[in-house]
Structure formats: structure tokens, C-alpha cells
Image (cartoon, rainbow, N blue to C red; front, side, top):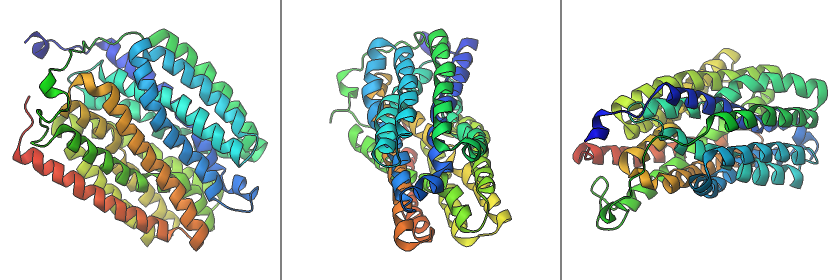
Length: 406
């Protein structure tokens, strides 16, 4: 009863959340170099865009697998140490990626940036920060997850100029040094033990057939959520990874494409804070449903306009739509499942969402290489997005029919 009236949230909770945001901002920045330099890197391999696009995809996929491993290690040794390790691995991965646009880029991004780097930072920080909050958890998760999109808003114009002046390899090396200089001291200073006390889950709540979530077996609901995350992240990745190249195909400059990507991700960062407040009021599942429907509508806009003004408008709309989805998935897990299961459910979910991001970025490059333009890829993305909406709508309907016990 005491826990219901005494909040664990303090001023320190928000300090930790903002430091986590800055950490995510730096950790996520390196992967955007490949997106900005996609055409330059592809030029070294005969113009095949699926080759560098695979590097970014492997980083997303690797971060998902790494999150499961690192989430477990963070529970045992502390989030501070997985974040420190992740920062060093991102720097090493960027350095390895400069050795070539084939295997070195794939290994550098997939194994070191993704598996060990982002894997040691993303999932552990989601779990860690969620344990500093109990009343405004949705807002806090939305804030820290914005680091990826704030990185996308901030870094592409900087990377575009750096690549033009020094080259994509030198840009990766410069950024690798910056990751270590910023993240290491922050992790040492701020990521100590979290205040939430994890109470062991009674046997009938551990995801067995005896317990139920929304009236269904817990792991059936969890599987549906994971599948939905894959289907929504496939279209989510397409504009993020290929917008600069898409603009180049339409005759716009790379700097304009980088600016458009910044608008997309800057809008995502700003609107994500609004989505966080909304999710605190209406819950995670309803937030996912609204954001997914908005994202699908915005993807349709990419098929219907090719003008500069139209693309800026669609980019902003896309950023506003998809920005609240991923933290709402994490919030949904904390709403539906016990806190003691967060250390494996959240990283597993992020593995599936990362797999969707990986598939979307690579698939868009593959379809472009086959057809010579991006419309087929965007159409596939719209299709998977519609399937996602159907699954989430079914779960929201279960909430309406069978309210979740407090």
C-alpha cells in the first residue's frame, strides 16, 4: 500500500533521464554517417546501394541481439558498465568500418556498433530509466528514446559537410573519438543503482498458462506485440535510411536531402515528448495504434509527392507519426507484465523492432537495386504497416473488452 502513495520519482530521476538522452544521442549518431554517405559509399562498389544499406541494417539487428545479452549483464553488474563497454565498442566499430564498404563495414556496424555497442546502451538504458519512474514513466521513456532521432536531426547536416570536406572514413574516425569523450565520463558519474525495488513475481504471473494477460496466455500477447513491432519498423526504417538518396534521385542536392532528414527526425524528437505525455494518459497500446496509423498515412504521402515543399511536409508528418511508437511498446510491456520480467521482455522486444528496422533499410535498398526507384519499397512498407495496425487494433479491442487489473 505504501508504494501506491509514495512515488520513487525525484529530481534525480529527471537528471538521469536527460543524461541517458545525451548518451543515446551520441551512441546513435555514428550509424547516420552511412545514411548520409550512402551514394558515396555505394559508388565504391559499382553504385549498389544495398551494400552500404546492409551495414546500417546490421547495426539495428545487432543492437537487438546485443540488448538481450547486455540487458542480462546490466542486471548482474550494473548499467554503468554495459554503457561504458558499449561506447568503446561503437568507437571501435566505426574505426573498423573505415577499412572498406564490404565486410569491414558490415562487421564494424553489425558486430561492434550494433551487437556490443548499441546493444550495451539502448536496451539497458530503457530498463534502467524505467526503474527511476512510476508516475510519468511514459514521458521518461519517450524522452530517452528521442536520442536516436535527436541524433538524426543534429548530425546529418554536420556529417554532410564533414564528408564533403574530409570524406566518410575520416568523419567516422572523428565521431568515434567524440563518442568516447562524451559517454564514458557521463556513465561513470550518473548511472548508479536505480531506486525501484524488484519484487519476485508470484508463480501464477510468470507467463505460464495459469496467468493471463488481456484474457490470453501472456506469451501469446507478447508474441503478438513483437510481431507488430517488426511490421511497423519495416516502413519506419525506409525513409530514415534512404531519404537522402531518394532526394538525390529526384535531382535535389545531398545537403537538401540531409536537411530534409533533419526535419523528419527533429520533428520526431519534438513530437515524441508530446506522445510521451499522451501515453501516460491513454496507455501504451492506444498510443501505438494512433502512431502506426499516422505513419502509414505519411508513407502514402511519399508515393504521391516529389516536389521540394511536398517532401518537406511529408517528412515532418512522418516524423510526427512514428516518433511515439517505440517507447509506447516499452511502456506497454511495463503496463502488461511484471517489473521482474522487464530485463528479458524489453530487450527481446527491441530485438524484434531492431530486426524490423534492419529488414526495412536493407529491403528498400534491395528493391531499389532491382527496380531503379523507391516506389515499390514504399508500397511494401505501407502493406506491412497496415498489418501492424490490424494486430494492435485487436489488442486494443481486448483492453476495451477486458480492462487490465491495476
